[in-house]
Image (cartoon, rainbow, N blue to C red):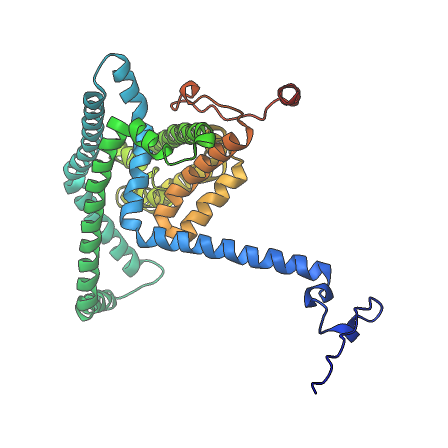
Amino acid sequence: MSEPQRKQPEFDPANPFLSESTEDVTNLVPRGLRIGAALSWRFIVVIAALYVIVFLIGYLSVVVIPLSIALLLAALLAPAVSKLTALRFPRGLAAGIVLIAGLAVLGGLLTFVVAQFSSGLPELQKQLTESLNQIKVWLIDGPLHLRQEQIQEFINQAISFLQNNQASITTTALTTAGTVGEIVTGFILTLFILIFFLSGGDQIWKFLVRGVPGRVRNRVDVAGRRGFASLVSYVRATAAVAVVDAVGIGIGLAIVGVPLVIPLATLVFLGAFIPIIGAVIAGAVAVLIALVTKGVVGALIVLAIVIGVMQLESHVLQPILLGRAVKLHPLAVVLAITAGLVAAGIAGALLSVPLLAVLNAGIRSLLHERDPDPAEIDVLRDQAAQPNDPGEESEAKS
């Protein structure tokens, strides 16, 4: 005869531990701990998803970076293409004219800089020789009182160091050559993508929007258009900052009397489009030429001018002009540039603020636009979405 089944004790709220076999263990966990655990695992999932996205972007950087730069250039050149289209030029022809003109201007600037440096190189070499002789005389007759043998020994040690490290120097040169090859490949890919962006960017965007559900398609379409309008404003503001940098440093160089003022100012203008690194390289070239032609005092004056202009750019021009253009707080601009530089180097610093601007404009549009019409959005002007009037919302609900 089978043993009768034992009856399980009912749950007693006063003694929860007496009925653990029938009580759900979840009810034994404090409510605050359950909420914390729920938030924690969701936070971990979000961070993991972001990590995967960042990893894929880094893995596909050969494609992502040219695509992003082409989008920036499209934002810069789109107004010119639009004006030619308004004059009844076919869009493909207008894109080709603007692209060829842009390449011609860029090539002309680079050619002018190289030609000016080449024509002034013999004089620079002569002044460099004189400066080295002056330094040598100062080392011998100055407070250091070095002997000719000591100076020659130092030069021999420098030559020996270069000979002993010839292998590493060769390896670095090969690596640099490989990097130059990657840059050329990226440039060609960027140019190829830019052609399609300028000639058929609107059709590409419409094709992408077709994958969005119909009930939110217009909202997403408008958000994307507002994001691109914000990108156009960002590029214009960056060009304004570059002009101020070039004019400021050019005037300073002219006052000091440094030669090759116009090529150096042009180099500063081009370098300003590459955050931090471009300005540092252009400023270093200006200081080096001042050192050769005007001595230590002139070089220190030029260094002070470069540092002052760079400080003006970093703490005033970029936060204020870019902040107004893309409607971002100056602190957000500075933090975005810093985070992009730390995360992805020069490319990250170059693309961080445009990405933040596009996300800001797009998210604001998604949150505040009600039944938008994509045809009313001018992508060449920054029309940031504003919150709807509470009175209008109440009327719409009634």
